[in-house]
Length: 363
Image (cartoon, rainbow, N blue to C red; front, top):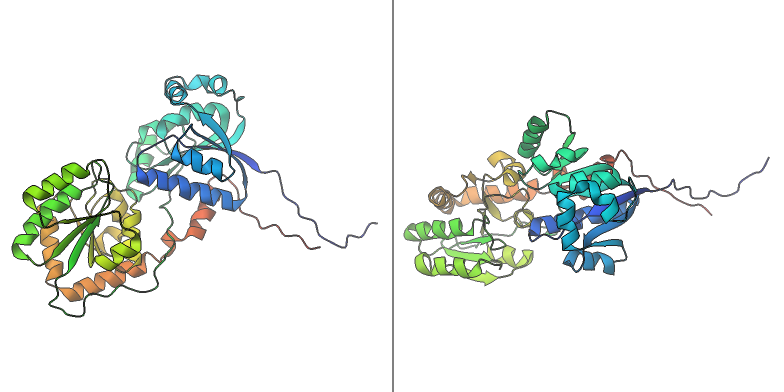
């Protein structure tokens, strides 16, 4: 009998995973690409290939980090959308070449099913129908998950997985010591249709009539910057467009943070402001509904209603103890398990029917 004096590392064959990443303009989906790629890589469970358009920022970043790339032209992407049965031919990939495929876009699920044994889709909005060809679906919010269960009649497993958040602040940002000092209400966004910044400007116009000393700041930049500044010049010229601001700058400048978006399955800026202990208020979009526990953590207002937003902000300005309670509730909420990166990674790996295993070697 042979005696072994040392243990050697035993690693079972890693599963092959195709990470499908079409070029998108939506910053939230680009953020999701980074989050999922980071945790899938960190798990060390997969042999990954990234399929992304030539020249896309995500593809270039992934290539610079050493990932195996499968470039795809925009023409091929459009063609594959219409002819999913041709994926094995047009991608020069044999049928079921991959164990898994992960897609944040619905249109690709059918085609990916030709070259991967199991397709997992990640839905960022209410466009659920295209995911009917996925074998499993991830939604960011509970309300969209309920819609998916109803639409697919329980035939596709649906998992609710809000994005994780890594806290970066250690204490709650204080309000001005002088209770008579005017407060600053801030908002941020990508300056795109649906970001709610127009609603915020209209609410500022209404609120300014009763609280002329309140300051209003909008952080960010984007395609609709000219239109928003033009609107502000016409009805609320006192609104300050501050340009891009990081979390620390917003936390230092804002006393109240307002998310007025019409569709926000996930808002990184909202999480950042909660982390800093800034009092938040949001529209009742599906993401904030979950993040703010249906209004138990911070106030929610109807989508697109500038008047009710102004009314709620006026109530807060007249009740500083309530602002302090909201600040504390936001600070504590973002530190709950729902946003734990570790738990997110464990859930993510479990979607593939796998468990993370720690391998060690003792020489």
